[in-house]
Image (cartoon, rainbow, N blue to C red; front, side, top):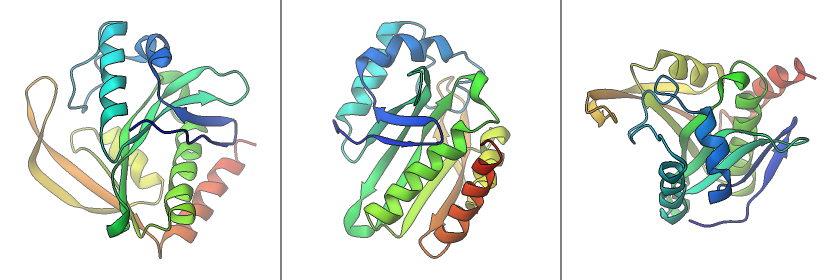
Length: 192
């Protein structure tokens, strides 16, 4: 859904995903980076624009471009989805960053922003994250955030290449948020 939420910390800004982000996002994408996504690898600006449009139209979804706070350089994209306020839950995902931002401040800063908004502004009880179980890099990154593994849903997802895979599920619940927040802030302090 179209929204106007902007969040920023530690040199990273999340701004509403828009068609003008498409060319920069396309430049970050390659088949290996896109591995585990359920949509086809975008190969043109029009493909990314269609992907952006679908995200903006999806109910219960707030999609973001991830940009450098100082330079405005597009680093990737992430989103809230399956937002169900009455049930106190949301998921974070469809996240990717250009390789230049892997292993740095970008992912923990984005997750701090998203978790903080979900727990402290919206007052939710649960934030879930998931990844294709074959994507060991993403699963390890989710664990480093402090999320608790919940299990694997077998044969749960069809990848863009048509292969059927399992989905690894993780979550952070409101009781765990103070410790997760402290861990993320400690990680981010190392980059200051």
